[in-house]
Length: 139
Image 1 (spheres, rainbow, N blue to C red):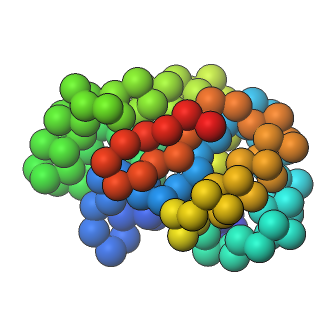
Image 2 (image 1 turned 90 degrees about the vertical axis):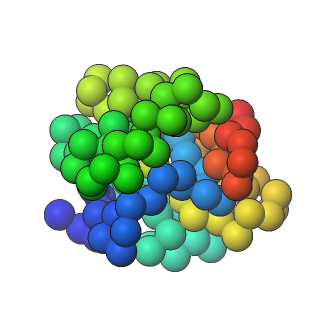
């Protein structure tokens, strides 16, 4: 598999939140290659794009904290009651339904958020969110 699909985002330590990321869902995983190409044309490096698919994607995201130790489990337990709860639950459901979850690292600016959002929506992305430092915004 390529470095974009189901990457180990926790390889340097558990990542509790995808800060400064635009995240959206593509119902048809066949749209992923063209969505990645659109994101690249919009100026995002391949390293800034992460795609999660299926059971492997769910395991790599580790939205329950099962695979990354006690700190991860505690963090995810708290998040189940925080502002991320609905977004994380929806992400799990989308992956289990066979859909692709696409994340794009931005510099946090509204300009980059807009470019990433536009590129993903041009491929029918939905359930789009921007993860800031202390909140998740609907896009």
